Image (tube, rainbow, N blue to C red):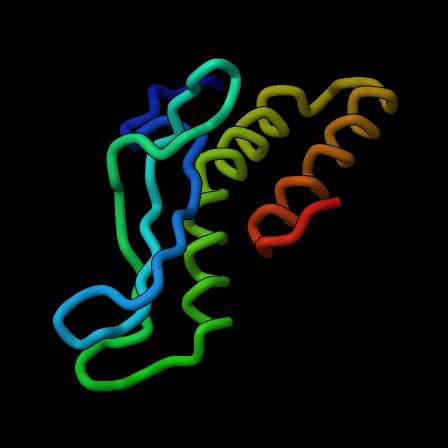
Length: 113
């Protein structure tokens, strides 16, 4: 059950910037990752997350967590699609799938395994 994706394909990465925008609020950009000599660098910007929204300031950890969760979305989407497509795979496949799932969740939390 393969479907054509309509979103920008991953990987996406998070770029964290200091003070930005007119209100001097921190911002991070979610960008399409481009490979340059095997190193992922920021390509086209896809979205931004800031601590300031309609005069309300959120703490840094909150907006940073949102950005990492958004950036992990293409990998999570692909992993879920794969699980649907491989529903009758063997136990060894699911062990590897589980390891990948844990790594993606850690990435979405802004952590690493």
